[in-house]
Length: 415
Ligand SMILES: [Zn+2]
Image (cartoon, rainbow, N blue to C red; front, side):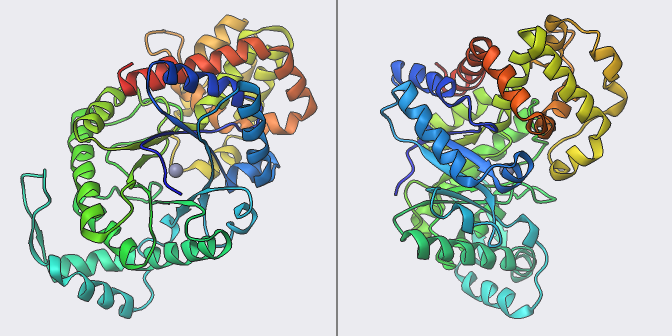
């Protein structure tokens, strides 16, 4: 199973926005862009919302029927490991194998030595076509890399083989993610990571490194966009060279996690990808949930009351809600409005504080991140939440489509 050149990870926490999401992909298709939707939902999200993996497949299939989507699509078991993969084997065809927890915990010297030995042909001066400065590769550097990555790569191999055993080697798309690692990987580290995965026999089609700068959920990139652009270009060269050198799938491409709302990066990413004739996978899951919340708030009445309730819960339980996302949110608590204040807001006030319109003085990125992790409160509302969603369906759906199309797909693909 080959992943198409351009794919967009979309998430739908509550499984109600798939058709509205697909309308954005249909607009892309009308403009001649083949963009493949991949519904990703992590085990973490399933646990927080109280859903089973099969629900994502069911919602995807229902959305495809409702929207009349005739293109291909995938369902991604996002951030899974050996302990969590089982429940996804039957219903996912895309697996994001997350081994960040195994980084830097190499227990024995043997796998590290084996790695250093296997990489001897790259020792000395390593030139990667397209990158003008050569990399100096020493045994010391390979050892350091091996100590940091050998166990993680071995673990990725174990998960990969488990999936292959259940689905057949051609029955799935594999991604390896290290985006929630403590430190970013340099382009040369990405090269050796791909090398190690290839030697492990993991035929990955997407790789999610941790890039420099910060990719917080639902808000713009925090960092130096020009420096990011240089790193991203180098990473694209690394991926192209790794495909040839290690006989990895020709569809191998970079995957950008926490990729929603990175408005300052989209033109840069898009230009680099087009210039190098590369592919791209970008995950935007959380932004659809935020549009759902903003649409509810904007519709007033019960929708607004539900949004205010979610905010109050998230505010009061901020530590609990943020804990699973510690690496990917950064909230300045002093800048969060008190729930009592938010209860006094109009529909327009709340929507303006939440919507990611950087030109609006009312936009509050701290509130937006808090609501991002607040979907658990929506899940706890249960039927009340779904009834409010139904009441606000038109406003929410329009917001979901417009957000993906105007703010994400168009700037990324220059449409
Ligand atoms: Zn991720």
